[in-house]
Length: 247
Length: 302
Image 1 (cartoon, one colour):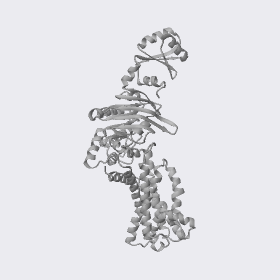
Image 2 (tube, rainbow over the protein chains, first blue to last red):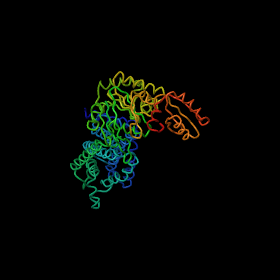
Image 3 (tube, rainbow over the protein chains, first blue to last red):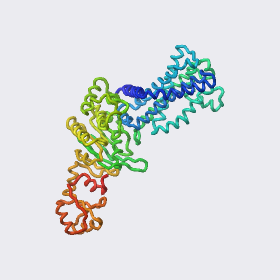
Image 4 (cartoon, each protein chain N blue to C red):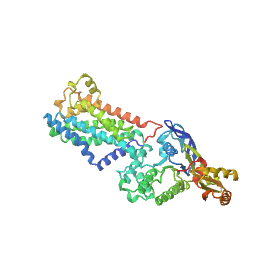
C-alpha cells in the first residue's frame, strides 16, 4: 500500500482545516509581533530581537498545530486513523508535515516584517531564511507531536509550553548571546535545538550579529538531525502495540 | 469469520473481560448485548484493533489481530459510537481522506464514494460541512465512511445511538440488505433489547462474561411458556409460599417476583386462590430477551 497517499491526505487535511479557521493566523503571529515591537523599541534596536521573535512565531505555530492531535483524539478522528491499514509512520509524517507547513506559512508572514527590522539581506538571504524556517518548523512540529501524543488535555500542553518550551526559547540566544552566559547555561544552550534554529536565521538575516554562534553548516546539520530524531521517536511511539487503547 | 478465544482484559486491578469466547459465521448479523459497563466497549476496541487484550486471541477472516493488524484493518469497516468524522471537513472530503488512509485513489475511490453516498442517501449533502449535519445524517456519513473500502466485516458500536425511530428502522433495513446482498458479516454492540432481537445470533455480555449465546428465538424458547410477574407487600414470604405450594422457583428481581411457567394464565388463577389478598398486582407476558437476561444473571437489565 502506498506510503505517501495517507501522508498527502493528512497534510492536506491540516491545510484545509487551517484555511477554514483563519483567525488562528492572527493569534499565532500577533503575540511575537507585539513582543518584538515592544522589546525592540525599548532597546532602540529592532534588528536584535527579530530572528528570535521569528523563531517564537514558528514555535507557537508548530506547537499549536500539533496540539490538534489532542483534539483529533478527543473528537474521534484519530479513531478512524488508527483502525485504517495506513502505516502509523505515514500518519505521523502527514501530521508533522502539515503542522510544519502551517508554521512555515506563519513564519513567512512574520518574515515580511524584516524590512522594518532593518534587515538588509539579499534575495539569497531571504531564500535561505525561507528554507531555514521550514527546517525549524519541521523540527518543532516533530517535537510538538512527541509531546502531544500521550496527552489527553490541552491544559497539560500549556504547562509544557510555559515550563519547557518558553525557557528553551529564552536560552536559545534569542535574548542574550551564548558568549555572555554562565557556564551551565552555556551547556544547556549547546544541547538546545532552538540555539541552532536561531543561529541559522541570524546568519541569514543579520549576519553581522551572528558572531559567536555556531557556524551555518553545524546549525543546518543539527536542526535536520534533531528533526529526524524527533520524527523517528514520534513514529516509534505511534507504532507501539499496546493493551491500552490507541485512541 | 470472527473468532474470539478466551479473551481477558484488565484495566489495572479491574477486570473488564474475563475469558470471553465466541465465533461469528460468515454473513451473520451478530449482536453483543449487554448493559453499559458489561464489557462491550472493551471487546469492541479489541476487535477493531485499537488495543490488544491482556490475554487471549482474536482472529478475523483467518488473520490474527495481534500479528497481522494491518491485514485485518483492510478487511474490517468500523463504525464507532463516538463521532469519527472531521467536523470541519465536508462529507466528501471526509470520505476522500478515509479512502487515502485505505490506499484508495483516482477513479476507484470516486466510484466507491458515489456508491456509498448513494446507498446511505447523503449524496446531496456531499459538499456540506459535517458540522452542519443533523445527528441522523452524521451517523449515515459515519457508516458510509466505514463501508467505503468495501470491508468483509462491519463492526458497529451502538450504531443507532441518537437516532430517531425512523432513522433506526432505515439503518436496520440497510444492515440487513448489506448482509443479504453483499454477504458482509456484521458484528454490532447494543444495549437495546428490540435491536438485539433483530440479530441472527446474540451473545449476552454481563460483568465481562458471556452468560448465554444463541439466536434470539432460541434464547426465549429456553424459558418456555410464559413469564408471570407478581407484586406483593411481602414478596419474600410470597416467594417461599409459592415454592412450598407449587414447587416452583420464583426469582426476586427488583422488588417483584418472576415465575417462568407454561400456561401462565392457569397459574395466575391458582396463585390468587391459594394466597388471597396477598398479591397487589400481576402481569403475564411471553418471554423477552429481558427475561433471558434476568434468568441468566439474576439482575435487571439497565
